[in-house]
Length: 87
Image (cartoon, rainbow, N blue to C red):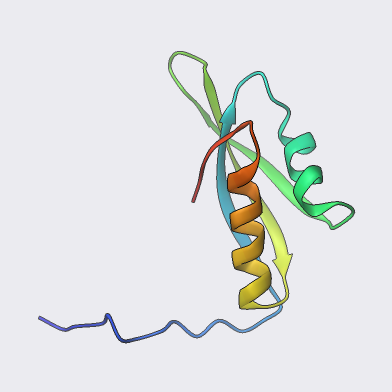
């Protein structure tokens, strides 16, 4: 078995980065994303809805400029009250 734990993926920046964002269904995804990104451009695509219609998932694509930028956006999305999960 090959051990890849010491390997780091090389990402060339800037790049478009997709995040899967799962929110409470009563929340508006554009409002959530604007709270985090301000005036930065992003693309939102509907992904799925839970059977109980409690949650909705979206693919949110953002141009990230560095590893720090990518991780910061991820962390800020997780802090939003309406957000349940970010992948």
